[in-house]
Amino acid sequence: MTTTLSLLTPSGRLTLGNLLGALRPMAERQGPTDDRARYGISDLHAMTTPHDPALLRTRTRELMTLLLAAGLDRATLFRQSAVPAHTGLAYLLECTAHTGELNRMIQFKEKGRGVPSTRCSLFTYPVLMAADILLHRPAQVPVGDDQRQHVELTRDLALRFNATYGPVFTVPEVVTPAAGARVMDLAEPTRKMSKSVEGPGSILLLDPPDVVRRKVARAVTDSDTGPDAVRADREAKPGVTNLIDVLVACGGSAEGLTTYGALKAAVTDAVVAVLEPLQKRYVDLAADPVHVDDVFARGSARCRELTEPVLADARTAMGL
Ligand code: AQP
Image 1 (tube, rainbow, N blue to C red):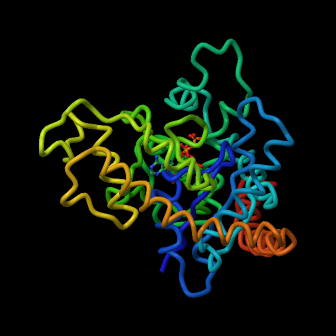
Image 2: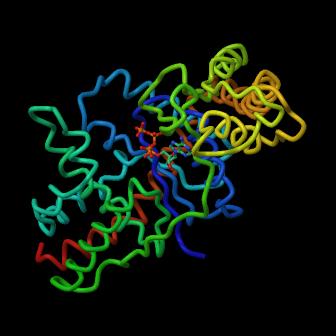
């Protein structure tokens, strides 16, 4: 079995999209007890745009607790900022990367659009991401479309480094994960539910049942009132299709439902049934922050052991 690596950025509060699209598959990929599933909190990536230190701390703690509450307790859990090899390797890779290739990164262009000046870290973010990946030597990196360009850059940097300084890095293969649940925003069902856009269209993992009910009740549908109105059609009925997808991903079925009211009631029940046990575990874990800290401290220590030799190889190869 090869190493799998996933990082989540504390750029907002986790949504149902993060649970169905990331935490659930991450939980399934864990081995019995091993350090091949390494899941990190990319707190350094949350600092590439103006940020509030107190809020970053709060969000990081919530994310640490939620990862455990979501059942990721058999993986090696770590904080990127607690594993100095990540920034150490990022600098070495910056000495391998070119401004032209970073300038071409679509995400940099999008996030920097209309802003007179951005943080340098937003520009170099793909290099830190390359370091995140290469340090852990995964054979494959499953990525969605929005991160594909960054992983292609990671491959280019690894190939260039190996050709120039010697074979230090495993060049990861980019794989497209099996079409996973892509949960769309309830209020704007043509864009994905995002943790950095907190609004009525995002169901947060810690939303109480009445808030879930209210958000689902206000979800955008359409004016179709026919007997087969409740049907999936991503182009013509994006809101209804999203609700059906969420219902199915949460263990329900839209079969036999004929009205949007009935669909929304079923979605609410299914989502609440998925969130309730997770929220109960969250409350218990939040009452024991020392335990949560300890899990991440142990995981970060293990990642330091695992990554320092890789950084040392890269330093030596570059003549340091
Ligand atoms: N709506 C979604 N449906 C399915 N999966 C989703 N993910 C995010 N939104 C959905 C998955 O959650 C993980 C989060 O990774 P990240 O922290 O690097 O953030 P991201 O990919 O940029 O996603 P977000 O949550 O929308 O964050 P912001 O708002 O900061 O951009 C990934 O595995 C992602 O696929």
